Amino acid sequence: LTGKGQVSLFRSMLRIRKVQLRIESLYHLDEMKTPVHLCIGQEAVAVGVCAALETRDYISSNHRGHGHYLAKGGDLRRVIAELYCRETGCSKGRGGSMHLVDTSVGHMGSSSIVGGGLSIGTGLALAAQRENRGRVSVVFFSDGAADEGTLYESINFAILKRLPAIYVYENNQFSVCSRAASRYVGESIFHSIRADRMFTAAVDGNRVLEVFRAAEEGVSHARLGGGPSFIECTTYRMRGHAGAGSDADLGYRSEEEIAFWEARCPVATF
Image: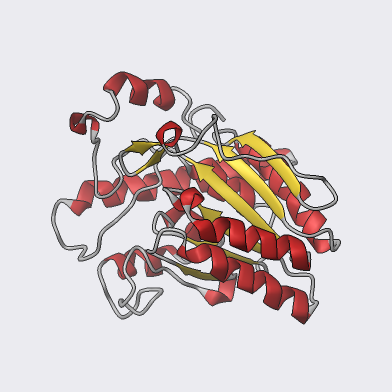
């Protein structure tokens, strides 16, 4: 990336962070009649991946999707209006924080169902393949979705049909209050596979350039008809699972652990 391109990445991450902090500061007023799931600490994943995409490309998001929406080019005023359930919101005030959509920029929707966007994003990849216009489909997932059987079913189908799908696993360490290590054997769900079947990468999800380079390779692979990709981005959810503020008082993680990851903040360290 050029210096200008890197400044653009930084600006996008900082913008998402400031928007999240503003939502957090206002949430206690109870005027946002929707649950919110903040992505503070995970900005580099959304920004790095979406920087490798074109407006025409599709993304499928999840309940922690404010960053995905803004990084893909979604309208800031419309997403804030959506949080306040207004008709001017991106989902006409009927979706709230967990069901953002803006088809004009290729954001085809968020699902509040854990793992719900996996099969939808795979279907979008199938549609893109049949349209044959060079589109790709990025599927963002995290927060326990990696435990769902639909992930493996979707990837198997994508490999079988050589779909232009890029599966982006935001490994933020937790599914609500349950650590990843308690849910599957090994350090991660990242699996190796023959390169002729699927491009794979495991990157530091707090380093936006690493994310961007992996996404760029996966997107190029898909556009050339090489089939799907699986990119694991290791990052950290700095706030509680839902709502605003820290949840260290719940006992499943410590203030020291949060401070360790805050020192690796993707915005501050870039």
